[in-house]
Amino acid sequence: MNETKYIPENFYSVYNQHRTYVVPHVSKKHEREFRKSYWDPCGFKPNMSVLEIGCGTGLFLEFIKKNGITNFTGIDADPLVLDYMPDKLKEKIIISDINDYISSLENKIRFDRVVMID
Image 1 (tube, rainbow, N blue to C red):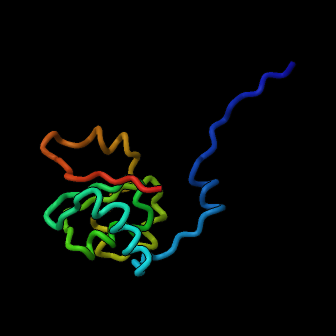
Image 2: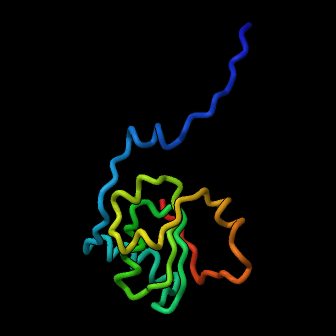
Protein backbone atom coordinates (compact mmCIF):
# COMPACT_ATOMS: atom_id res chain seq x y z
CA MET A 1 0.00 0.00 0.00
CA ASN A 2 1.29 3.44 -0.92
CA GLU A 3 1.55 6.02 1.82
CA THR A 4 0.01 9.43 1.06
CA LYS A 5 2.12 12.35 2.13
CA TYR A 6 0.27 15.43 3.34
CA ILE A 7 1.43 18.62 1.64
CA PRO A 8 -0.26 21.71 3.04
CA GLU A 9 -1.56 24.11 0.42
CA ASN A 10 -0.74 27.77 0.35
CA PHE A 11 -4.05 29.10 1.61
CA TYR A 12 -3.97 32.44 -0.20
CA SER A 13 -2.96 31.01 -3.56
CA VAL A 14 -6.10 28.84 -3.46
CA TYR A 15 -8.28 31.49 -1.79
CA ASN A 16 -7.44 34.10 -4.41
CA GLN A 17 -8.73 31.80 -7.16
CA HIS A 18 -12.22 32.00 -5.60
CA ARG A 19 -12.31 35.45 -3.96
CA THR A 20 -12.63 38.86 -5.55
CA TYR A 21 -11.67 41.83 -3.42
CA VAL A 22 -13.46 45.16 -3.76
CA VAL A 23 -12.78 48.64 -2.44
CA PRO A 24 -14.71 49.04 0.84
CA HIS A 25 -17.81 51.21 0.70
CA VAL A 26 -20.00 51.40 3.79
CA SER A 27 -23.55 51.31 2.45
CA LYS A 28 -26.67 52.04 4.50
CA LYS A 29 -27.17 48.27 4.78
CA HIS A 30 -23.64 47.81 6.19
CA GLU A 31 -24.18 50.73 8.56
CA ARG A 32 -27.38 49.16 9.93
CA GLU A 33 -25.90 45.68 10.22
CA PHE A 34 -22.63 46.77 11.87
CA ARG A 35 -24.49 49.04 14.28
CA LYS A 36 -27.00 46.29 15.19
CA SER A 37 -24.50 43.43 15.42
CA TYR A 38 -21.39 45.11 16.84
CA TRP A 39 -21.47 48.83 17.67
CA ASP A 40 -24.49 48.88 19.99
CA PRO A 41 -24.19 45.47 21.70
CA CYS A 42 -20.45 45.85 22.27
CA GLY A 43 -20.70 49.43 23.51
CA PHE A 44 -18.31 50.99 21.00
CA LYS A 45 -17.45 54.65 21.61
CA PRO A 46 -15.35 57.08 19.54
CA ASN A 47 -12.55 57.29 22.15
CA MET A 48 -11.85 53.53 22.09
CA SER A 49 -8.97 51.62 20.53
CA VAL A 50 -9.95 48.74 18.25
CA LEU A 51 -8.11 45.79 16.71
CA GLU A 52 -9.75 43.93 13.85
CA ILE A 53 -8.30 40.51 13.14
CA GLY A 54 -8.73 39.50 9.50
CA CYS A 55 -9.74 42.97 8.37
CA GLY A 56 -9.82 42.14 4.66
CA THR A 57 -10.14 45.31 2.62
CA GLY A 58 -11.27 47.26 5.68
CA LEU A 59 -15.06 47.52 5.44
CA PHE A 60 -15.62 47.34 9.20
CA LEU A 61 -12.68 49.67 9.83
CA GLU A 62 -14.24 52.19 7.43
CA PHE A 63 -17.46 51.88 9.43
CA ILE A 64 -15.83 52.58 12.80
CA LYS A 65 -13.77 55.40 11.29
CA LYS A 66 -16.98 56.93 9.92
CA ASN A 67 -18.40 56.70 13.45
CA GLY A 68 -15.54 58.57 15.06
CA ILE A 69 -13.01 55.92 16.08
CA THR A 70 -9.54 56.98 15.00
CA ASN A 71 -7.41 54.67 17.18
CA PHE A 72 -7.67 51.37 15.32
CA THR A 73 -5.48 48.70 13.79
CA GLY A 74 -6.37 46.10 11.21
CA ILE A 75 -4.41 42.93 10.70
CA ASP A 76 -4.61 40.56 7.76
CA ALA A 77 -2.30 37.87 6.40
CA ASP A 78 -3.05 38.59 2.73
CA PRO A 79 -0.99 41.47 1.28
CA LEU A 80 -3.40 41.78 -1.67
CA VAL A 81 -5.97 43.52 0.56
CA LEU A 82 -3.78 46.64 0.47
CA ASP A 83 -4.45 47.00 -3.27
CA TYR A 84 -8.12 47.67 -2.53
CA MET A 85 -7.88 49.93 0.50
CA PRO A 86 -8.08 53.69 0.63
CA ASP A 87 -4.62 55.16 1.31
CA LYS A 88 -5.66 56.62 4.67
CA LEU A 89 -6.67 53.16 5.83
CA LYS A 90 -3.48 51.42 4.66
CA GLU A 91 -1.37 53.21 7.25
CA LYS A 92 -3.39 51.48 9.99
CA ILE A 93 -3.02 47.96 8.56
CA ILE A 94 -0.46 45.34 9.45
CA ILE A 95 0.16 42.42 7.10
CA SER A 96 1.16 39.57 9.37
CA ASP A 97 0.16 36.28 10.87
CA ILE A 98 -1.98 37.05 13.93
CA ASN A 99 0.16 34.88 16.22
CA ASP A 100 3.31 36.72 15.16
CA TYR A 101 1.62 40.08 15.67
CA ILE A 102 0.27 39.25 19.14
CA SER A 103 3.67 37.87 20.16
CA SER A 104 5.34 41.09 19.07
CA LEU A 105 3.05 43.41 21.06
CA GLU A 106 4.56 45.22 23.96
CA ASN A 107 2.70 44.88 27.25
CA LYS A 108 1.74 48.55 27.14
CA ILE A 109 -0.39 48.14 24.01
CA ARG A 110 -4.03 47.54 24.82
CA PHE A 111 -7.23 47.49 22.80
CA ASP A 112 -10.68 48.33 24.14
CA ARG A 113 -12.34 46.09 21.58
CA VAL A 114 -11.04 43.22 19.43
CA VAL A 115 -13.21 42.22 16.49
CA MET A 116 -13.05 39.18 14.25
CA ILE A 117 -15.84 39.03 11.68
CA ASP A 118 -16.54 36.23 9.19
